[in-house]
Length: 224
Image (tube, rainbow, N blue to C red; front, top):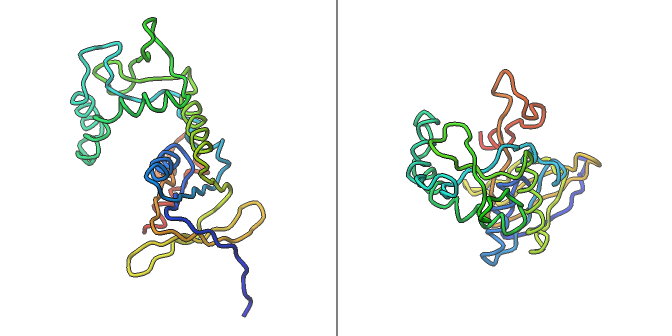
């Protein structure tokens, strides 16, 4: 039987996905004092987050003082046809202002009002203006800020890693097997905890302009 050689990488936390969600999770884990490693199948500077042009939402009330996290919660639940998990939406709405200010401090470079506060504009399903933006390249600004923060915290990010298998024993995931899409090199990533932040499943839609050939829902398939 032919034996396949592979490398081994070990960390406390393995984050699968190097976009905005994965990087922010990695930063949080590192802040908590554990060793974390990030892997992604694309170049870290060109993940799908860079295509998020519109902005990021937070009920800061900088333009419309009447706005509140409760209204943000209601707008989100209504627009999601009630399918969203209420507790998760509640946390998102409550914590968004603080986290937007945090990513801005890291260098996201959001547009400003004359008084120096972050500008906000309307976006889909909003009752008030709550979208914070950086021109028409908000996603890229956020990604670059997260990469800068991750680098300053010495969080390793491995590009071009395609996950072929999640390693599971007794219903506990302890890592992943990958291969490098550029040279075929195989790696076993072992960890105490695994975070899946592998992006969306664009192909469920008949028509889409959001990297249809790349957003294949890999994380969803692994879970199934």
